Amino acid sequence: MKVGFLINPVAGMGGKVALKGTDGEDILRRALELGAEPAAGARAEEAVKEFAESAGDCLFYSPSGVMGADLLKKYGIRTEPLFEASAHTTPADTKRAAKMMLERGVALIVFAGGDGTARDVCAAVGESVPVVGIPAGVKIHSAVYAKRPGAAGILVGRFLLGLAKRVASAEVVDIDEEAFRDNVVRARLYGYMKVPDDREFMQDRKTGSSGGTAEEAAELAAYVAGCMKAGTLYLVGSGSTTMRLLERLEVDGTLLGVDAVMDGRLAGRDLTEAEIKKLLAGVERERRALIVTVIGGQGHIFGRGNQQLSPDVIRMIPKENITVIATPAKMAQLFGKSLIVDTGDRALDREFAGYIPVITEYAKKVMTMVS
Image 1 (spheres, rainbow, N blue to C red):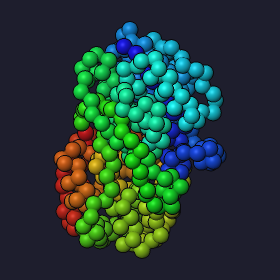
Image 2: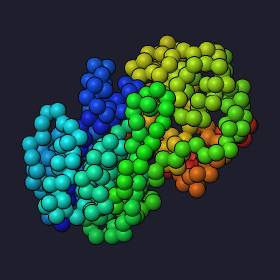
Image 3: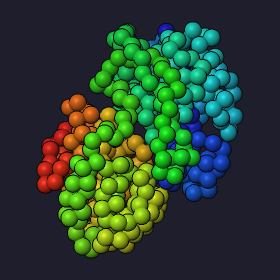
Image 4: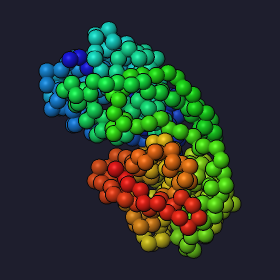
């Protein structure tokens, strides 16, 4: 079997530094200036570890170096480089690689990146060949990605062994990042690609807030605001549900960033990972708290759009001080699916496995499984 494999090396670099993505050279430059480090390679390696033994005599086509070939060779996977990747890769490199993979007759394309990467691959291959996306970006609204890197590796392994024959069309969605940084979400459907038809490991497309939930969200915000303790520093994650809480507190927070509140006052706005760690270090451990919501339709509470809440940050907060909130309508969108934690640290992800309480209404909680 012939397989295509590529990594977008800059995917996800804007997450921890609160840039909401890395589309465009100017944003990438800003991310580097803020101390951002590449993360896509490590995410891709989680997947490769899972399918390396199943690769057998398969031939993988990949751009050289950090775009894929080096990682495949590290695990002894038979690899033929497509071209010499430059030190500064661009979307054109992704499209070029995908087109060359098609020309060589690959049966599957595996790629690591975010929504921009999926969009570039889609532009080159459409629905002509199945794909599996390894989530390595910031937002990842598209349904062509697995729930976690390890899940992507399992799916690829099954495909290589002939155990994942059924495929389905999945949406490729991207957003306007400039508007996103101004707290405006403009999502656009760019096309479809074929993916393994496996709801256990593939994520669904992100859904927006459903209509008729404004009153539910207001009541939920009122309850959570009333439960907040004096002298405690609260980090408030991104999302429309948490934004209702900030509005209830009458603080100028952000819809899509991570803010900090203490005693009803804004203590930090649209914070980077480094800024969060500095704030947390200034208060006693038991006075650190975090409030996050659920990604609609997907179920993630960590790892999608809130990479500022890194494993280091999460470990600084007592687990009992981490609160998950979601309206009944948002929970209904999951159709009973488990919640997902994808921090990039497997040991930390396992610590959240099991049932956790999710506050859904005034003084009401539901026990929900974290897979």
